[in-house]
Image (tube, rainbow, N blue to C red; front, top):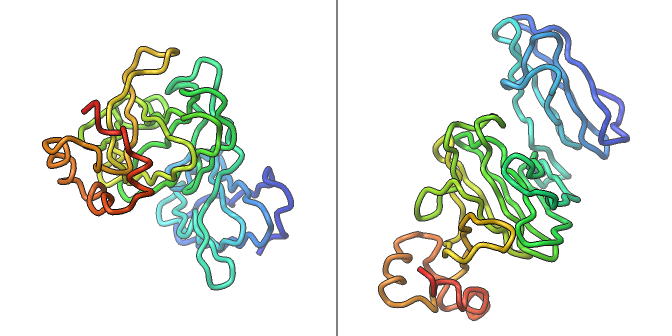
Length: 253
């Protein structure tokens, strides 16, 4: 067990990865820490010099089955008493200057909170979509933020998308205070838990965007029939709060 981590920049280095070595690393501090490997070793496929973040309150088992390769079990999860906890990224300021897929602030945790989004279209970028991943984003800024999938240069697969009803490589706007869950069932594709509509792009970009709808109550009958095939659209019409959120959301479909 390591001494408590007192700052978010604290770090440790694993020994050389040799087959048969098993280590348990407990972080009982108040902050996450970075765990680095040595030389050309990797941790869950991440380069030694980059390292992985081990959250506060977690115990992770690092196992070497193949020379040069560490496998970390339990990374990204911990506990607070009897309650499970998950890696969290807060205080994000969405990229304002020339926002794009390349410049968007990287999302690096299972739960991420945008604190500052001054202008519609300010950007964040998702990590590469790997099957089994799940990330929750919430925007507490003043405007909608653009959420981009990772590019191939950022470790994603070529043509990585955020998929809702159709596959899209364009960003989606993350509206204020509405948490969105991104699921990855197939590597390279994020699926979100809300139905979209297509809206006009903000003045700062020529790319079409997707506006996320919370209801199908205001759709035309044909559009409602089409959208209600998606599980996320079902059961929202009876809730007046959901209806208010999505009052004009489907008119452009």
